[in-house]
Length: 236
Image 1 (cartoon, one colour):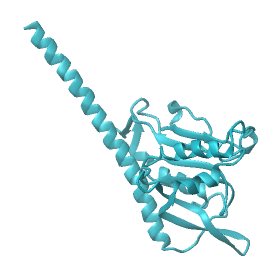
Image 2: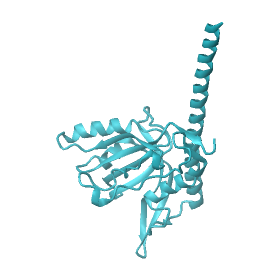
Image 3: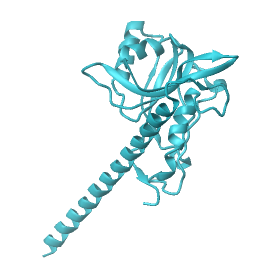
Image 4: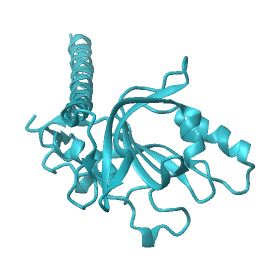
């Protein structure tokens, strides 16, 4: 009888763990779904027209856009470890603190206990002790780790300019086509009457080598930020 009770207790414990894991995965997936849906809605509202991206309060500035997507949806979610803490998304590391690599490679370090629900999924930093081809091989491996919902932060030198850019990947890396799909704002744009205007993109797609060529330069690199596994619905 004691063995039966012990066995039942173990089964119930395992069942509880499984149920909790499933619930956490559902909440995390829902958060990502809502972020991506907000991006699509914003893209549709822009209707292909350039949007002002000049001032600090303009949501169409590249990092502002990804922050907007996050903040529009964060109130419905929390971290299981810190259920009473409102979620926050860190700012970029300030330029004065970017001593080793260029501004835009990474975010500020903000603890989960202070509301940061992201962990680093992968990083790439140009290594001057290696050849360009060796660096590119590492950069490709980095891009192959892209997952749906990843926030991407890079410092680039490419066709659209030189500097920091932020975006959100809307699907996993596709190994068959070697491509990634994303949403962003202000990668493309133009200046009108002294003000910057940005194009909102949704389901933009490129071969990963396009990104490799963008950020695989001395003093540059990129980071994938990924939501923690313990995302739950608020008030759960």
